[in-house]
Picture 1 (cartoon, rainbow, N blue to C red):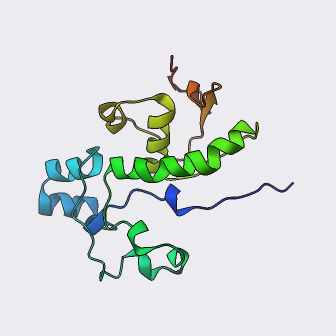
Picture 2 (picture 1 turned 90 degrees about the vertical axis):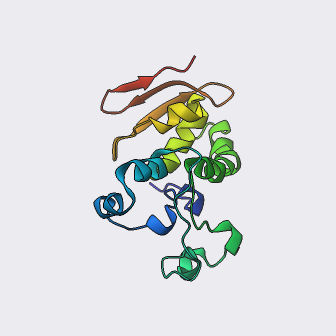
Picture 3 (picture 1 turned 30 degrees about the vertical axis):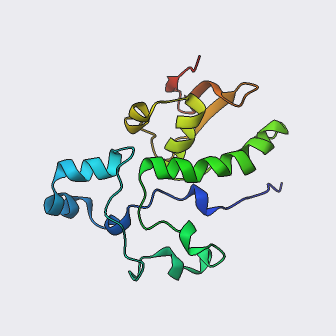
Length: 163
């Protein structure tokens, strides 16, 4: 009846810096669609950084008061998101799986994309094109090294079989 719950900021969505919370169409009109696409989907490319005095800076949110300021990003690339998510995988998720516990991860698109990159051994270029639908559970069956040997959506659409 009771399931343990672990909440962690490392599963947050990628931080889009100064673009955080802005309307996509207005942002594309201001900077150009191609530039916005590079910021949103490029693996190593970060959007313009948020200023630490900006009211949107995470330091102002009580949920993050225990974190050091350098842990709170002012902008992130997908590469940065991978670097933030993988330690949580290694420290929290993987040990639970090794204990043969089933783990349900509820997170945002880019943090999930970071995990799938790791599990499926996707290249930087492949992960940029990876689409993960919202609200459709994705199951990964893992081998003894905790790498995906089979993955599928619960709606029946297979995304691949790692070899």
